[in-house]
Amino acid sequence: MSEVRIIQVGSDDADLRLDRWFGRYFPDVTHGALQKLLRKGQIRVDGKRAKSNHRLSIGQSIRVPPLDSVSSPKKPHWKEQRINKKDNLLEELLKSSILYKDDEVLALYKPPGIPVQGGTGTTKHIDGALDALKFESDQRPRLVHRLDKDTSGVLLLGRTRQAARWLTQAFREQSANKTYWGIVVGELRPVTGRIDLPISKLPGKYGEKMMIDKSEGQRAVTDYGIIEKLGNKASWVALRPRTGRTHQLRVHMMALGTPILGDGKYGGEGAFLESEGLSRKLHLHARDICLPRPNGVQLFVEAALPEHMSRAWGLLGFELKAYKDPFIDLPSKT
Image (cartoon, rainbow, N blue to C red):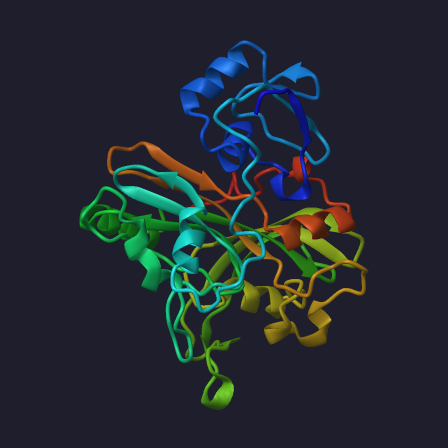
């Protein structure tokens, strides 16, 4: 690219860090080269100098100077792709979805609609494609937690046996804080709260569907906080599961009478809003994970909203800049 370009930030890149935006669209630009361009003021946001950690907003303009090694922006491979019969498509998808990588940890953005592990009738899943993410290591990455098929967001992997062990322990001991973003339908009260309702699997023909079961269910605890409200119609909520039961957040939100938008499995038609342009997909996203390493240093990884949720934020008028952590004053363990 031999000329200056002005690129407008789209909905898919809202709240993305500037350095990660360059990593997504101009992968040939090294970290050092990017920092040099920023220091010289050759890269600007809305005409102003910016730092690498600047959070982008929809509609902002990014000045991209001449970059001889790059001919055109790279489009994210994961956007709205579906798994087909090509054996390498899922592997390519995973490689293009890396959020963070070091010698111990690999963090992926998991798109909605792709299962983490196999099951009845499921032949393509992330766990079955992890050999493609070995890179320079001779070990295959290991799953240390999971996300529902229809949930998007941060998925952590251990790159060694030792790393998988301490990551798993962090989730088990509840020192790993996972924050989810979602939209719920209806009026959620109070503004913040803790849901402590046991969950068990529905018997018989219902498959993997859960229910509140106060007599024989396993304890399930979820903290929640409303970030923005759309009257009594819908709310943007932040959710933090303190336990890791199957479909926990979806069951708990339904138990309060406010199903997650698009969750027809638990909320039926009551989980949908009549608004032109709103997707009927599940609006639940694993926004970030924060946990301590064995040396005490905090590991923090976050993922931008998927396309259908970013669109919903715009249609419903929710402002990403309005987010404030509602869990600061809450205890970290149950």
